[in-house]
Length: 192
Image (cartoon, rainbow, N blue to C red):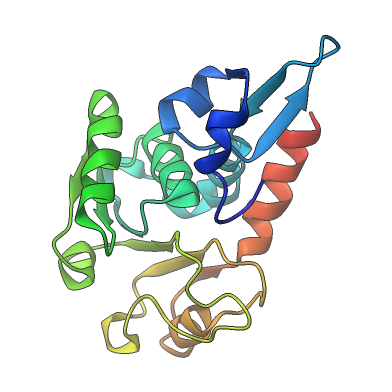
C-alpha cells in the first residue's frame, strides 16, 4: 500500500499488527488462510534499518521530520525506536503534526515544529516524509538555503532516486540517503 492510501486503508482491514495500530498507517497487508486482512507497517522497521548508520549516537541527534502522513509517521516511529533524543515534526497541517507527537509521547523526544526553519534549528539530520519531489513533481519540501554540510539528509521519495532535495543537499556537501534504501528494507520486511 502506498501514498496516499496508507492511512485510508485501515478501515478496510480486519486486524492491525501492534506496530500498525500504534502508528495509524499500513503499507503491507497479509491475507490469512481464513481470509482475514491484517495490516502491518514495514516502513518503520525498514527505515530504522536504512538510517541506522546515520544515527550511530542517537542521544546527540536532533532530526527534523517533514511530513506527518503515513510514511512520516513510520519515519518518526523508527527514529524513536533508535532512541533519537530530539525529533521535530513539521507538517503543513499542524493538527497532523500534533497527532503524531501525541502518538510518540510514550516514546519521548518528539515535538511540533512551527515551521521548516524551526524544525531544522540545530538539527543533525533531516528526513523528507512527504511526496514532494516525487516525479512528475520537482519541488522541494525544504529551501536549499536551509541545507548545510553538517546535516545528513534522507528522502522517502524513490522516484527519482536523487530528488531535488537530495541534489541540493549533495551540492552543499551533506551525506544523503535515497528512498531506495527505505524501499528495499521495508520490502524485505514485508516479504518476511
